[in-house]
Image (tube, rainbow, N blue to C red; front, side, top):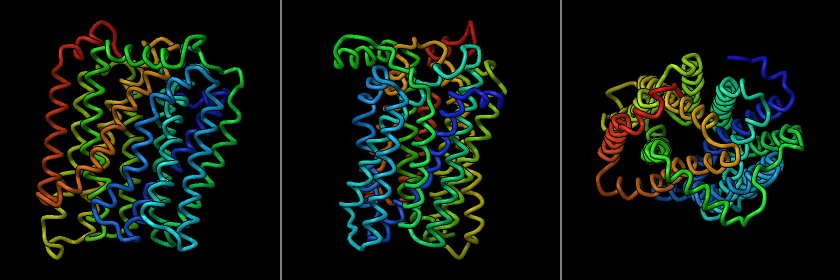
Length: 412
């Protein structure tokens, strides 16, 4: 990786701001999950709280992409960080004062979801304005590694603080981290402005949607991202904490999440070293690894607790989460580079918003669907079905002629 790119002031501001933001993004969900459980949430209630953060993200991300193509991207990034900081601070205050209820926690979480809807398109699209064209590939990989480093630190920190202190302390720490990101993003050049001029906002939004819709390879990868996030969010994010409480505990659950994000770092490094040699159709198979932790969680909830030492379950779940993350990055890096190099600059934020929407739309649907499915079929069978869904979707997209032909002449 070309770490020397951090000497470029504009890219350094972007990289550091994203690093801090992803620390907060890794810490916040861990604290929110256990805050909701402590307030008495079951699988359905927890799914509703988690979905409350995801739904505004899904609903507003296309709007965020269109806005980032029109306005200075640094201002959009700063505003998004303000919303995220305020969201975590509000939940921390509610818990500390004893006034927290599940609906209030869900409402505050929705504020953070709104911030994320603007954050992702703006900070992804601004990359091409911070480095020379020849450095876009290396900057994309370095940006992904920085994001994953933040998630590793944030997830581990969240689990550690929740286990040692309380969810409200963890949420307060997360709010401070997002506040530090605000200062970092303020260092982005003020002349990094939107690339769309004139026309109505609705027309710009529609043009971005049509661009994605008429690109077969984008549609195929969009569908795969949706299915993978549907299964992973429902299985791991909702059922996972209950499996942790029944086996190895909350602190180790946070560290298992850190191992998961460590896999993202390793996967990004591997994909970066491959540079353009890994074809997108081949890389698509990597996302099938996201079925592994679903299978391990199904075993945890199927086998009697005294049969297997809980630490063994922690080990195998960590291995599965690590492998899932490596596979995800093996898929994501070629896709990210393809977008950066092939999509016109004027569409970049809207295309990223469309792809983000595909991933995010799966999250609340998975989080909302898994509770009723568990009530009817049981957690082990639900987890097994979700894992099978990921495997089938990955195989279909990898076999798609449109995806296989995309980078046949030149690698992505």
